[in-house]
Amino acid sequence: MSAGGPVSPVHVTGEVLASKRIGAFWHLTLVAPGVGERFRPGTFLAVSVGSPDEGRTRLARRALWIHQVRPLGGYAATVQVVVEPVGPGTRWLAGLERGDRVEVTGPLGRPFALPKEPVSTVLVGEGYAAAPLFSLAERLRERDCPVTLVLGAPDEARLLNALEARRTARAVTVVTRDGSVGARGGIADVLDEVLRRAGADVVYAAGPTPVLHAVALAAEAHGAWSQTALEQPLTCATGLCHGCPVPVVGEDGVARTARACADGPVLRGDRVRWDDLAGARS
Image (tube, rainbow, N blue to C red):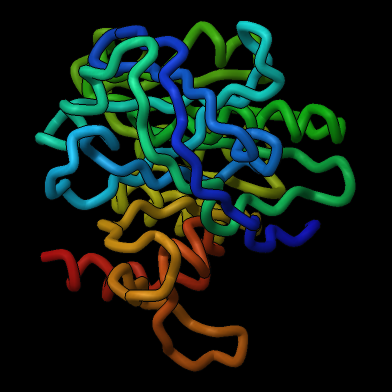
C-alpha cells in the first residue's frame, strides 16, 4: 500500500459556485483555491459556520467529506461536499446560495492509502458519509484495481449517488433499511457475501461507527486489510486541541489514543479499539 500521509492544508475564503438538493442532501460546489489541487480521497474540509461578513460569534466549525474535485465554470479544481442538514450548523450550510462566501480550511487529515499493485477492492459507505468513496473508486480504477461498491442508507432519500456508483464500480450492492431501494436491511447483512464474491484484498469504509466496526470485523475474517474513515466531533480540526480522541492499538501492541482529524480520519480497521470507542460515545 502506498502510504496515506497527511496533506498540507490551506485556509481560504471560498465562494459557493452551486448548491443543489438531491434527496435529503445538499451538494455544494465551492471555489476554494488550493484545496482541490491538494486533495486526496479521504481528506476533508473544516468550514466556518456563519458569514465572514457578519462579524458575530459563530458555531464550531463543521467537518465535511470532500466528495469530488472537478473542473467547472472555468475553474480548474472546484470542490464538492455533501451536507445533510440535521442541526443549526448544517442547516446554515444547506442554505448557502451561489456567490455566498465561506471560510474553508483543507484538505485536512490522512487520506486512504492506495495499493501499489492491482488488487480486488471493496468500498463500503452509508448515507452522506459515503461521499469520499467515489473519488477513491476513480483513483483505484486508474491503478487497474477491480472495485466493488456497497452503499447503504435508511431510505432512498438518504442513499448517495446510486446511479453514479454503477458508472464507477464493477459491481454495486445497495441496501436500505426500509427496502425502498435494493435489498432490505443493513450493510452488515450483506458484507460477508460481497467480500467473498469479490475476493476482497482491501476493504475501504466510510460511515457510522457501527458500520465501520462491522467492516473491520468482516475484513479480518476474510483475510483482507481494512481502512476506515471515522467521523468524530471536531473543535480545531488541525490536531492541536486533542479534542477528537480515538482509542487505537499501536503497531507495538500498546493501547494509545489517536487524533481523528490529524492521525486520521482514515485509520486501519484492525487498529481501532471499537468497543472502547463505542463506550466513550455512550
